[in-house]
Length: 199
Image (cartoon, rainbow, N blue to C red):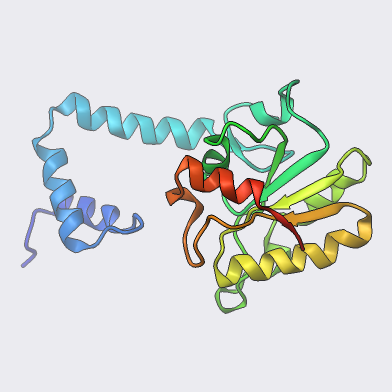
């Protein structure tokens, strides 16, 4: 006999699919949603549905956007000479918080991880190389996370891009090894951008 009614079990099971959500947290969230006013719960459901239906990947930089190309790619005040390469779309926000970087972005969609079956072909590297063909890009800032996978990706990109005549730099000190860019404050991220080094 199940512990809860079937709809509650399903809700708990779906919530457990979210990152960092285990059985107990999923139960807590499920019962919170059941106690919430119907309008609030349906508003959450509508927000999820709208995000899934209206958001897509930018055809240029692979950021998540509701317009294609995205606002970063079309902004007239952004420098076309620099591209900052990040692993995931949410990493862009950490860099934007510094209010000092005014170049373009490129989202790889992850980092090299042979153990998880993610090689160069699974990342958005080919489209990055295509973006360099115009000859306007002078510098690629590799801002992958300072993890083993992020470092391996940075080294791979450096070896791949340097022969194409572009300067390749890596974000510098400020981000601890093993940390995620999402948790860096503005000052730490600023120091990391200022202290970038050639690869």
